[in-house]
Length: 244
Image (cartoon, rainbow, N blue to C red; front, top):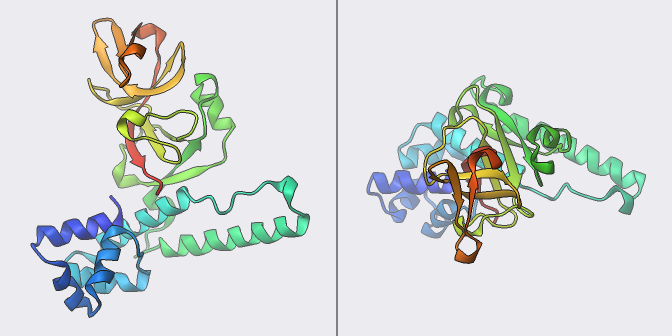
């Protein structure tokens, strides 16, 4: 859940209006609306006042704020560049800027003695699944996204895909999004899974039909039935990060 969605949910649970929060913070109602919509993002110094205004624990608010900030960094693209198009001096400047940014980011997620490594796990981000081989894909990526440890099952293995070549528009999983999968999760009928099919790696709904798996996209003419042994399930969707 994003910080804005969390704040809105807490306000509605307490049956408060936007104006009530605005009065408590001594700000405009439009600013509170922007916070809840994600159009504005508060600084860490503002969290204490926000916690009091919304009547929530500051520690919980800090964690939610950190998670939202991590998702922003995880899908950011401003540090991507092609080394062939720039000179050595520019590469050095970009590397230094990135290093400084990461150091500052780690400081912002430290709170009450809880550091980044103790609160979060790093999940690899793939642009594609090389030949349907997860292990091989690990070797071909250096991108990572962070997940809070309290939001995942201990001992399970996770990976994510930056949606592009592999997508699932039926469920609103489109270009630029990040889909996070659990390799060890139990799968039930109707779950969204990543599977290796004879037609390539696909995101799809899981619909078992006896000893077969049915692939049924919105376009009925593409409906297929495969034996389970023909389609290894690579993971179940557990989180879907939208890019706006």
